[in-house]
Structure formats: structure tokens, C-alpha cells
Amino acid sequence: MSVERRRELGQFLRDRRGNLVRAELGLPPIGRNRTLGLRREEIAAFAAVSVTWYTWLEQGRDINASRQVLESIARVLTLTAAETAYLLAMGGYTPVPSAEVMAIEQAPDHLQRLLDAFDFPAFAVAPDWGIAGWNRAYAGLYTRIAAVDPEDRNLLWLIFTDPHLRQMLPDWEETSRHFVAEFRAEAGARLGSAAHTTLLKRLGEASGQFAKLWADRGVERFASRQRVFMHPVAGELVFEQHRLVPSDAPELHLVMYVPVPGTPTAERIRKLLADETA
Image (tube, rainbow, N blue to C red; front, side, top):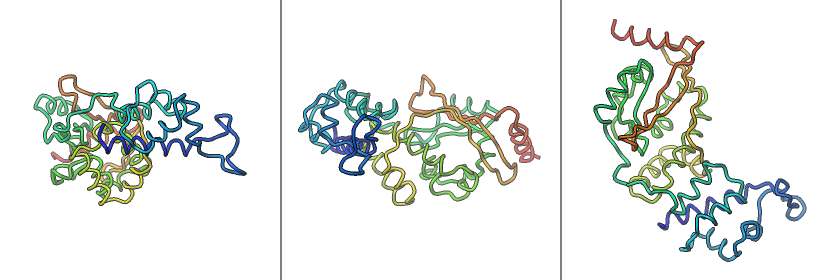
């Protein structure tokens, strides 16, 4: 396990331990009114490990933690499924993705043809969340995509640095939080790689809001959900966001914005694209 991953594992454990509600675990307050946070001794006792060993784990020392022990600690900390998977990844119990496939500049031709077949916005995302391909409907939704410098054509980078895109998202605060937590869940095993470190440093320097959200260490699995855009020409567009992973190119994810039935979104997209060709 790399030094960076050991440090992240320790900080993650400390953060989650400090946020536990003592009463929910049947424990009295510490002192007169401290109701949040467990002592290391309490976590160690609940997880059936020594206090010294657990302390070393939080300190990021070079010790071996079994999957069984990490899962036990996850239960004590009441971690979600996504948080547990992230903890296990930090401990080395999920395959470590190859750093060589972090960035993919262009989706394979057959995946681009699939994107082009959709009449709703769709795009391909690389492991570093770079946008590796998109269709005409996505270009109609986010008109700047083709003009963005390839180095900046990254979903996280655009969310936090493009004021035009931010104006299109009435729920920007919630969306940006989801994105950062999902990116952490997916990229956790790459922590410490040169490409991952460079991307995080660049984002942190460009956006204080990203830096704060990253420091919060939220972890979420991707979930299909409703997305709302305020398009400067078409007006309000309401989609369901879905994601597919091609079996022959699992390093790429295809993200699709499907118009929500009962809304004028599909018709507005059609009119928007028709006006472009008129």
C-alpha cells in the first residue's frame, strides 16, 4: 500500500470516527456535552482489535489490515456500502486500476457511433473524468464543449471552473457535491498516481469550493437521478441521468441524459437541434 493511500485511509477513519453520534451507539456523552465522536479505544473494542494496532492504522503506519478487520471497522463506523468499498480499496482489497488508462482522449469509433445514434444528450467519460466523446445533442445542450481546450475537457474541471455551465445548473451545489463524492469512490484506488495527484492539485488550486468538498471526503456510488438544466435558448430541460459501462471498454463510461416523460424536454431538444441546421 502506498504512503498516500495509508494516509488517506487513516484520515478517512479519523473523520468518520469523529462524526459518529454516541447516543446512536448506546454510549454516553464524553464529559458534559460532547455527543459526537468515539474514542479510539471504543472503536478498537467494538471491532475486536488492539488499541495500539487501531491507532497505528489511523496514523497511516505501514501495517497489514485484513479485509475481515476492515469490514469489522466499517460496521462499527456505520459506513455506507460506497464508503465501505472505498475503505477496502484504500486497504488494497479491490483491483488497482492501471494509471496508464487514467486519460483517454478519444472514444473508440464504435462507441462514438453508439453515442451518435442517441437523439438525447450523451457523452463518454474516461477514468479521470475527461470527456472523450459526445454526440450532437450534447453539443446542443453544452454548446462550448467543442471549443474547450482538450486539457480542460474534464467533467470535474468544467463543473467547478466554467461559469457558463454553472449558470445552467440551478442545483449546482448539490450536483457538485455528488460529482466529487462519486469521483472519490471511483478513483480511490488510484490515489497517489502521478495523473491523479496532478488533477487534484490543479482542481484544488483553481477552485476553493472543490478543495473544500474534497477535504470533506464524501463517498458515493453513482446513482441514476434527475438532472435539470436551464438552457439559454431552450429553457428548462429535465433529464434522467444514466450511465452504462461498455463490456469491451470498461475504462469508459457512457453517460446519457434521457428526457423525462411528461416534460417538454424531448421536444425542446429536437427544436434546438433543428434550429441549428435551419
